[in-house]
Length: 293
Length: 290
Image (cartoon, rainbow over all chains, first blue to last red; front, side, top):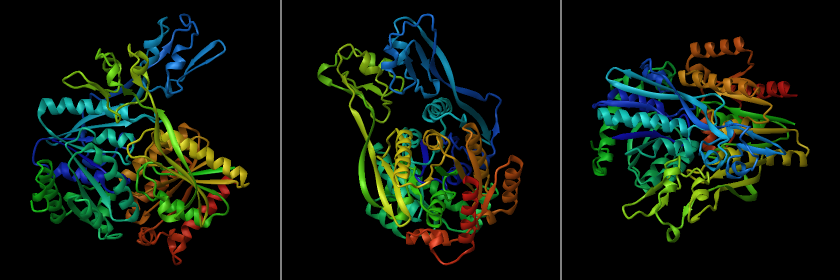
């Protein structure tokens, strides 16, 4: 089973929930940080990283100017303004390239060879019996989904070899990187707070992920803060509330010290054990059980 | 003209609440919400839309079933795993995965793949109680946020010129990827909002690295500094050692949420320590950008 922890708005507590779930999970687990722009899960799980850290690359064209006849076919092919032809010079802008391979395929002269652009670095590790995967996008690199795809490939390898469950810390937002993170999950858990911003972005996330047609539930963080509107919205749209984490300055302080919230008190530990049960019930299509587990 | 951009790296550190407060305490400016994915600034500024424009960007491949001979070339050539066939060899494009690269369209031997333009969202020019605002909404799950960000920035510049306004104040996006890079292009000064937590600190350093990469000046605000004094001091030391001005240290105050619930900027509420500190931060930004 793959569970992604997503949100819409940033800073609602995705990493807090992911790290806490990882510590209470009762089956072999793989914890994956797919927020490659700002990965934070390692700051709370403190995994022991293995030595086989590796770079991820995207294939981009390199020009062999001697073979180029300046026909302009590649310029016409490229949809991303990564190639330009000015009078008698063909210029490549590898940073703009999306790696579709179209220019290399269309060039009849073999003037465009295979080069590489670094996307970022992939890390593997372990925390006790839990395996850990994450990646950091290279500073200056604009595209996060190709790096996320590379991490997802490693995630699938580990899952198929070792039969683990996976919990995924997704990036904020509802556009392409967020969708890329949750697309193949079996369950999507949205973390929302009850502030007006939290509610607004939670609705956007709900709207954006609904077409994926996956079981979806919500964890309300900092419950008691803001307004009650989120409860009304969940009731009207039959969105199961999987857990509520109370608004408490002590939790914020513990988080600021890098502590895992499930380990702060017995009560908080219980919230996450019951969240785990609710996620399993939701995945099994047993919505009646959610909240009673 | 000065373009001031509020960023954070980590989400939820207070970019939007702070942008609204700056919009309240500053003089003439064009306000710009560059978070086109999950915009929130409008919840505090309640803009009245004066102009609404449809946003079209990029294209999407669509296979015309009648002409398709099921040769499979498109599926083979697609690098985004966006083309699949079912058990009766009917090929189709997954719109979520389609990158709009045109490779399948160009190489289809039957020329049976169309490539219509995509309607990705809407953008607006609005009036607010703090001045003119440019903002947008990308449709759920859409791509091309970077292009929409660039478009909003251009529009803000045009309006500023027309109205002879010398300041653009923009609310940014979390992360360091496509929309953030797009928002940094041409920005004169970045206000980075961080918090004294391991994530806040880690993500601050990545945004600073990005600003350095694009040679953009920046200053730092520590929000909720009193959550963890030790972490706050570490961040202050980081500012000193790396030559970044510390613009403000804001206390953790539930007034921010109360203001949000009322649809107000926090500086519009009763006098508060946080309000005073925000005003003084804006004065520092004024001095640094004049």
